[in-house]
Amino acid sequence: MTAAGPRWRICHIITMLELGGAQRNTLYTVAHLDRGRFAPSLIAGKGGQLDGEASGLQDVDVQFAASLVREIRPVSDARALVELARLLRRGAPDVVHTHSSKAGVLGRWAAHLAGVPVIIHSIHGFGFGAGAGRIGRSVLVAAERAASPITTHFIAVSQANAELGRRLGLFTKDRVSVIRSGIELGRFMDPHAAPGRLRREIGAGPDDPIAGMIACFKPQKAPEDFIAAAAIAARRLPGARFVLVGDGELRPRVEEEIRRHGLGGRVHLLGWRHDIPGILRDLDVLVLTSRWEGLPRVLPEAMACGVPVVATRVDGSPEAVRDGASGFLCEPGDIDGIASRMAGLLADRTKARQMGLTGQGLVGEWDIDEMVRRQEALYTRLLEERDVPPSLTGPEAGPDIRPMER
Image (tube, rainbow, N blue to C red; front, side):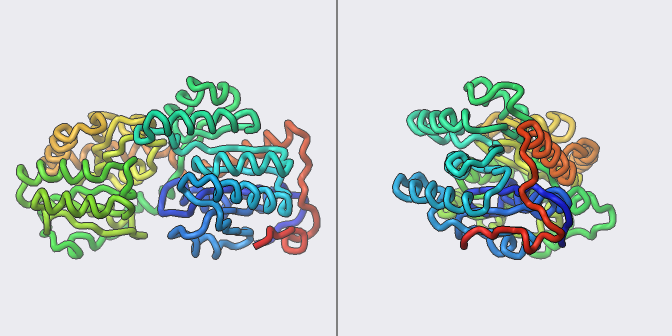
C-alpha cells in the first residue's frame, strides 16, 4: 500500500505488545491510518504475544526496543530513554503517540529530547490504580506530572479517566479528548455467525449455563475474585461451568484457588485465545472483577455479542454497562454481590438474553474505525495549529521513508 503526496510521520510507542485492548487498538490504528495523509511507525518492547502480528503489518516501520520493559528498573529505564530518543531522532516523526504508563513517560521524554513537534499520550487507565500502594502511587503520579508540560495533548478512553487526570492537575479540559477504545463491531455483531466450540471443548451440555471472564491474570483484574464468586455460584447451580480466558503472573494463585474451592472440572483455564467472538457467543454471562480500569473493551465486545455483563463499578466501566439494563455493576471486591448477580443471570437465561439484546443497542460508539478517524482528526488539528508541514514528500512511500534503526 503506497501513497503519493506529502504526509505526516506518526510514531506510536507502547511498552509491550501483550494480548490486551490497548495493544490491539494500537496495532489497528497504525494498520488503518489513512496512507494518503500519514506514514505510521511503531516502537515496542520485546517479548509480547503480538510481536509477530506487528512485524507483519504492511507499510509500518516496526522497531523493538530491548531496554523497554514493564517493570521499574532505573538502569534499564535510563537505557530505554536513550534508545528511544536515538530511534526518534533517526525516524524524525511529526507526532509521537504513546500508550501505557512506562512507554508513556519514557516515550514522551524521548520525543521531547528528539525535538518532536507534537506529543500525544493515551490513557488506557492510570498505572497508579488501587494496586499501586501509597508510595508507588505517589511516585507514578509525580512521574505523570513531570511529563505533563511536555505533552501536547492527552487522549482518555473514558470520561472517568479524563476527570481523574484533571483533578490531579495533569491537564486542563482543553488538553484532553475522550476517544473510546474501539472494537471491530462486525466481528462481534455478525448475525450469521455460528456458535463457537466452547461447549464441546469444555464438555458442557447444551443446557449447562456458562459464565466467563476474559482478562490478563494480574492484580488489576483480580482473577482470584472471579474464582471465589464462581465457588458461591457453583453451589447454587450444580450444572454451571466457568471459564477464564487469559494468563499471567497470578496463574499459580488462580490454580490454587480452584483447588481450594474444589472447582476442578468446573472452572476451565483456556489460556490466551484469538477466537474471542466465538467464545463470547457461547457465554451466558461475561464477568469482570477488575479493581481498576480505563475502559475495558471486553465489555463492549460482550455487549456486541448480546451477552450480559457483571462487572465491577470502577473507572470507565459504568460508561459501558448500564446497570440493571445491559448487566449489573458491583463494588470491587464484593464477592457475594458478584456471585449473586452472576448466578441470577445464569439461572434466568430469558432475563440474560433480554439484557444482552439491550447491550447490543448501546455499542455504536465503540466502532474502532470511528476511533481511528477521530485520532486522525486530532493529529491533523494539532499539527496544523503548530504549522508543522508534512515531512514526508515524494511520489511514493517507499523511497521517502527514513527507516528507524533496528
